Length: 124
Image 1: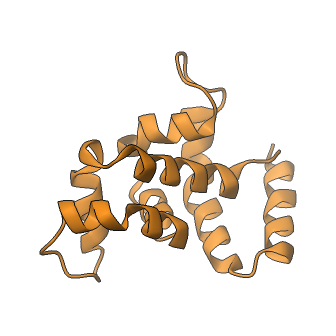
Image 2 (image 1 turned 120 degrees about the vertical axis):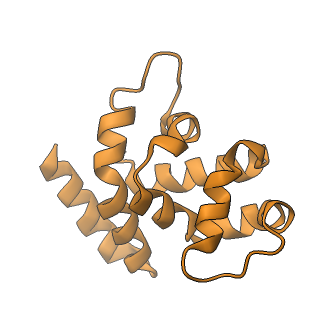
């Protein structure tokens, strides 16, 4: 298992233009995903659904890495504007607000978080 993660990480380093992001997600989330989503808990589907269902159970570094991915920020921008209108970016304040309001986020925003995790962590 560790070998496949290493191979995956090396592949991402070679192919991804913003490889630091990918590395951050892999480092922050691989243990969470292994614990919470492999094999997927009963009643859940692919990794996207598992991440959506267990976002609150992820470690703080994993949540932070996922929320900082540009496609997540793009998909969740309106949600962040609606749920966190007075929050100034920086110091993890947006992440705290997203965590506090995760249940109120739109389905497209939650999907973006799950898809980002799946793209960054999937070994397929």
